[in-house]
Amino acid sequence: MNRNLMSLPTMAIFVLALLPGKETFATGQLMAIGIDNKFSYSEDTESYQWLEPGNDSVIFYDLEKPGTPELIGSVVVDNSIIGPPTNIAITPNQKLALIANAVATESDESSATGFKMKPSNFISVVDLSLRPLRVIGKVGVGSMPSGISIDGAGKFAVVANRNDSTVSVLSIDGTSVAVVDTINVGGGVTAVAISPDGRSAFAVKNKEHKIAVLKIEESGKVSYEGNDIPVGLYPWAITLSQDGSRAVVTNIGYKSASDGNTDTVSILDISVSPPRVIQHLSVGDAPEGVAISPNGKFAAVSLLSGSFAVPKDAWYRKEVGRFSVLRLDGAQASVISTIDVGSFPEGVAFSEDNTHIYVGNFASESLSIVSLNADGEVTRVKDIKLPGPPGSIRVANQ
Image 1 (cartoon, helix red, strand yellow):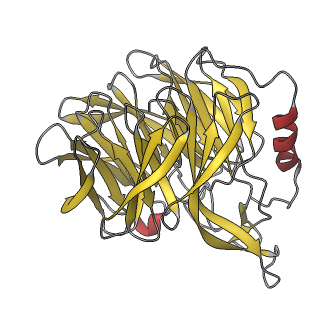
Image 2 (cartoon, one colour):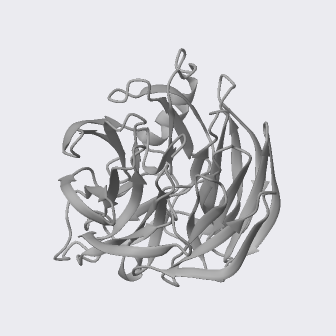
């Protein structure tokens, strides 16, 4: 995928933000999609490229009609594909969105594009009650903030800081967001998820192949006592069921990239003490994004499947990626169906009524909308063209 520094999709972000009549108030659940226009891959040189900063955005959709998401607005804000596609979180009351930005770009005359990557260390706060939507502040956290999670009461959040082995704890009071603590978890963390009861959190330690278990006291104090759960090879993302019984972790595999070999997800029972792995399930090449349906019956997993940043002559190279639906049934999970989507599928999310799944395709610059029936069978409904490459997707309360 070669992208010009100011391509038409990039310019469309700014047009999108200015279109009259688009900034409306949501009547259903909100979905946020992070667009990263500063990262690319050159097919000619088979290498990553860094592009001009300032062209990222997050776009917001109303999911009142799950099959036809309605655009309600966008903001120009830094965010990044680097890390799992859960760098956005929306408060339960849908008043604020928090966007973590793992990397930024800066001028570098020695590079082919004129820019180079540097670690970032902040999250942006977006006021979703304003029209037009507005970034109202930035909060400094650790180095390369990646995954982010907000508790069910909307009072605090935790941020996985990939580059310095820490988790930042944030307080949320109205529109005020502040760092109140920083916890060292002994390994670079890519994603984090707070349990539905708000008494624990689970942080993905990618290079240690483990999940750190964090304790959250009633006062909101967060601590790490060295309790880790071993999972699969290079875990990447984590999602929890809304009833607090299960967690699903994607193990992206060797070098945290697609290589043609099948990889796994780990199924955790988080209702017991201590939480534990109860199953490793083979799902395909390089599972990355993951979400559990609100009713807890299904999980959706995106599979890179050789569809991005793969040598032209690689035997496992494919034009499009895939995604699978899993059935979560008691102690065992199984793959129900797997279908093709777009190139380099990243984030996945469910509609609140469990009838649709949304898959963001980074290289295809599109959103796949997939219909799901009560038995977990899927049909591809349609694709929506996006104004740039989607690096993340998050639905409120997921």
